[in-house]
Length: 95
Image (cartoon, rainbow, N blue to C red; front, side):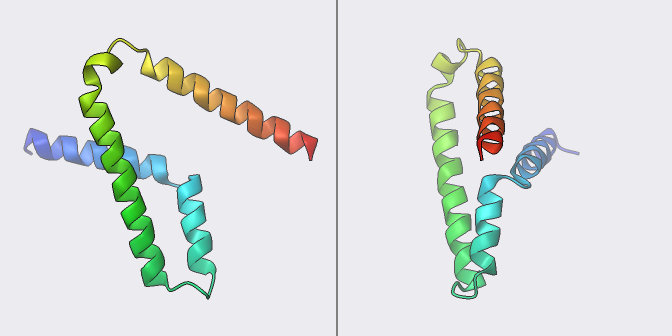
């Protein structure tokens, strides 16, 4: 198989798995479950929003690659997820 096809499959798989069950998907599910909203319009709006946010991420990532290579992104992302998890747990126990 062509190396570019393998890269495409790997990126698609990683993003697809990362998006499963996230807040965006749950919000889309809730909009689609409301009979006031057309499922087609929910799909178009959600797909457009995801395409735009992905385009921004690709643009920022590609233009900032020189600067981002000096930043420990995995460390920052990991700490960010830990902080969000702690915040969620604290908020759960407060209620």
